[in-house]
Length: 113
Length: 113
Image (cartoon, rainbow over all chains, first blue to last red; front, side, top):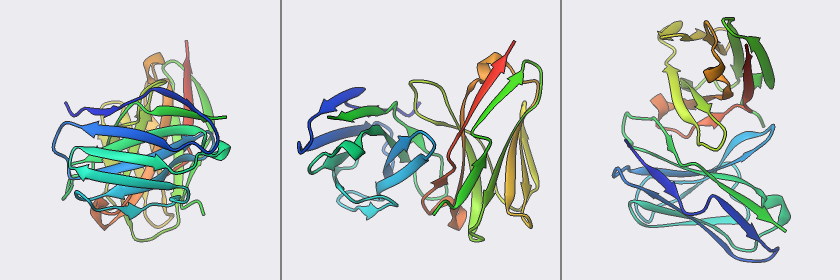
């Protein structure tokens, strides 16, 4: 089975801190994604990557950046955390090509105080 | 702009009953419609998916019904069980799923004995 591992289950940070959320997948998937999940808003795409060192903006990229230096690892960076970035962050990967199935990690609940 | 509208927000169904969750979309370029199931503390997982060349797809107790002219699709869970209690997300994408997924806002389903 594909495993998508997110480094932290819960994270508490202060306003203005730089925050790194790490995600690793173990099945050599081409595509990786970062979503945030908020009650009543569903899942919204922040950034995605189709290849190493490539990144594309999703629907809500403001206040975030990403890094993909290795195929298996996709990092989400909050340059200066704000309280409105308190959310559940979900990483996902997919094989690519004609295989669209997303495999999600268990999520990181980030609280910014 | 909500491109995929999902209803209801929450649903309570008696054990053995039929659970129905509806989604409507606006983008006529969408051609891949998956449903994801999420249990508490876990990431979403692909449940079932359909393409617009068929009007219905069934996998066990789960059925997707698709109405292209109305731009609507729905998930039916027959003989609902307590183990089906979860949050369900519909989603849609274009280019046979090679474009990014747009998710609905989610439905929290509770099956009561």
